[in-house]
Length: 235
Image 1 (cartoon, rainbow, N blue to C red):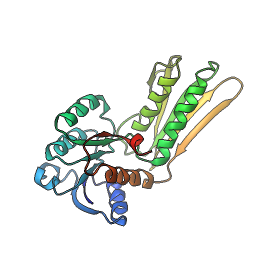
Image 2: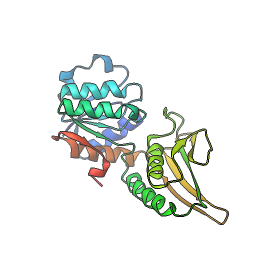
Image 3: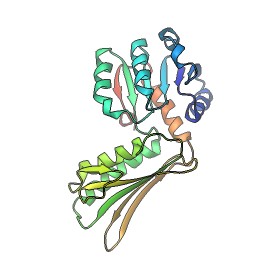
Image 4: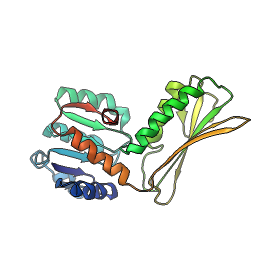
């Protein structure tokens, strides 16, 4: 499979390593220095694009892939306020989009665990819930896309929480503490607390391999398809 990489930082390089180990070919590498000069014809050399850029460039990158008619796997977060418009454009252009707040298989199993626990805890109002997410200092969006997914899952299941915030501590608000330190790949902790005891679940990434491997898996899944997909279509 021929892959184009949009975003060639640490994640892009890890994706390249894993893709090549699986005998895929990297035909195009796009970063800040050459993005403006990349043509649709160059993108069309690829069977699929894997996009891990920045919240500031992701929308233009998605649009360019749609215009080129090349399926795109989007790992960048911080753009979901525009998701409805992107999904509409994808359908109108008969394009293919695979997006996820986190491509790690472990994290997506954690999502399922989080929903199940929140559903159980809905019956026990003595427990309050909060979240902590820890990432490297280079991460631009706060909170992380993974944290937002986890928070929305909890709000869907837990009737006493109606929204989330990184600043408010109101009773009906799920507070998310966002920490940026060192080179932490990503840690997410959900804690239910009462006067009697605490219940805590955590996912801690040791490196970027899980994210990169999941992105390559998504690209393999998406190649040749049309429509909109997510990790739930794989797991």
